[in-house]
Length: 193
Image 1 (tube, helix red, strand yellow):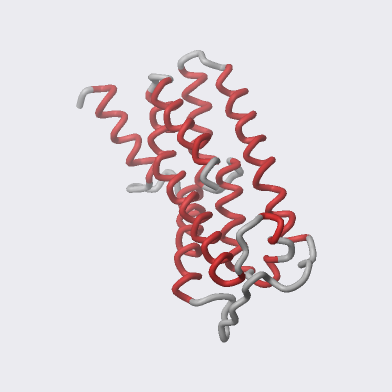
Image 2: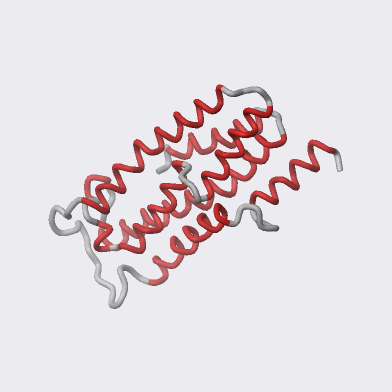
């Protein structure tokens, strides 16, 4: 998960480097979107480690059957990192693409598509293992919680942040959304208000 941060921070830098208002909106809004999606992934990884002792991708076979809510949150965040609509990551990449075309840097569209493909190459196999493969035995260190897949204190944070990632994508144009905040900042910078 930590290595994927490099590509995500590159989107932010790209948005600023393109020096156009729309691309800057994409870069700035990705600061918030990436943070929401990435913290969701880390929360989920922590849940898997704390509840089942899962620390490796190879141990994730069938984990979604044991921890469906955690893996649903992980799935939302992973799809957002790839840039699948309607998750927040799509909005960022959309604005970066529009901004690239605005300043005549159409080649950036290929970079965005390639980066999304690479994100898919490392997130989709994890999702496939978790949702579609059978567990290979006992979990390394399983803890049982009554009435829930893990403690509520562990389960609630990734569910909230995954919901925020969806809301940031679905409600991108709503006043006070990260996108609207980024527009305000960019308008003030580019048009000296």
